[in-house]
Image 1 (tube, helix red, strand yellow):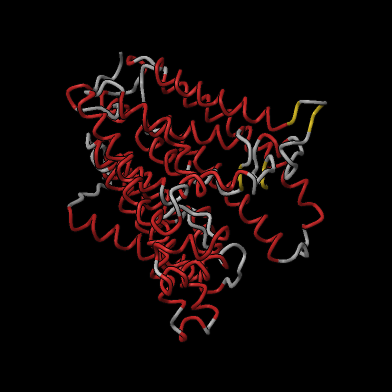
Image 2 (spheres, one colour):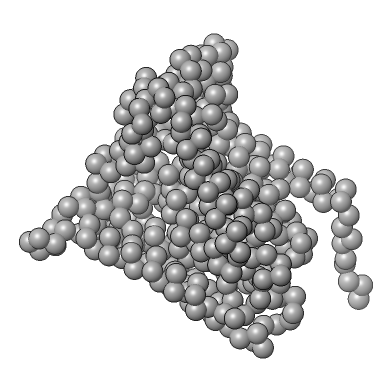
Length: 434
C-alpha cells in the first residue's frame, strides 16, 4: 500500500499558513460584523476618541477612573479612535462593531503564524496543525470576534516573549514581556515562570541587563503619561482596581464557583474573623510556591507546561478571577502538547477550550439578553456544573503534566521526543536533566 506523504517546502508552507490566516480572519470578521452589542466594548469608544482627539499621553488625566488599562493598550486604540471619528464607519452599527473589534481580531490572527514559528524547528507538520487549531479555536473566536475583548493582544506578546527567551534572546524577550504587562495587567500572572527561566543557569551578566531592560521599558513608556497625570500613575493603574473588583470570583468557572460561591464578596466570612478572601490568598501563594518547587525538582523543565500550570492554578484557586482569565492558558497548553507530542495534553487543550468558550458564552448571553434567555433561570446551576468539570480537567491535566515532567529519559519514546523539553537556556547550558 502506498503511503501518502507530503513534501513541504517554503512556498507550500507560506501558502498553507496564508489560507489558514485568511479563513481564520474571515470567520472572526463575520462574527464581528453580525454581533452588535456594547457589553464592555462601549468603553473603547470614549477611550479611543480621547486618544485621538485629546492626545494619547493625556488620556489618563482626561478619562480618570473610567480608564483602567495600562498605557501600551492606548497605542492600539489609536486606529480604533480614527475609525470612531469616521462618520461612514461610526454611523453604521455593524461597521462600528468591526472597528471596535478590529485590533483584537488582528492580533489573534497574527498569533497563527507565530505558533508555527515557535514549533516549526521541531516538526513542521505538528506546527502547521497547531496553527490551524488556533485558527478554529472557539474560545478565541468568541473572545475577539463576538465579544471584542483584548486578551488576544496579551496572548500574542506572551507567546512572543517566551519564544524569544527560548531562542536565547533575553533582552528582547524581557522587553516584549514588559510590553505584555503594559498592555494587560493579567500578563503579570506569568511573571514567576518567566523570571525563573530568565535567571536559571544563565550567566548573570546576561540576566541582569535583560531584567533591567524590562524595568526600563516600563519606566520609559510610563514617563510621558506620568508627566500629564502625576508620578503615582503606575500605582493607580495597577492597584486602583483593588477596591473596584472585590468579588471572590466574577463568573469564572473555578474552584469557588464549583462550591456555589460565584459573585460573593471576598470579605464574606465563613466564620467570625475568617473571610473567604483569606482562603483565596493562601491558595494563590501555595500555587506559586508549588510551581517554583516543580521548576526546581522536575528533571524535564518545559516552560510552556510550567507557564500553563501556573496560570491555570491561579485561575482555579486565586481570588477575583473573571470569566476570561483562563483563556491565555490555552496557547501554552497547545504549544506544550505539540512539543511533547502528547495526545493527552491536546485532549486537555480541547477540554479547556470548550469550557472557556462556554464560560464566556453563558455570561455574555445572560447579560446581553437581560437575563431573558431560555436557560437564564438555570444559570447558577450551569456555573456550578461546568466549574466541577473544569476542576476535573485541572486534576487530569496536572497528572499528565507531572508524568511528563518527572519521566525518566528511558521512558521517552525517542531522542526526538526529548528535543521539546529543553529549558529556556543558552544552547551550551541546556541539559535535559540535572
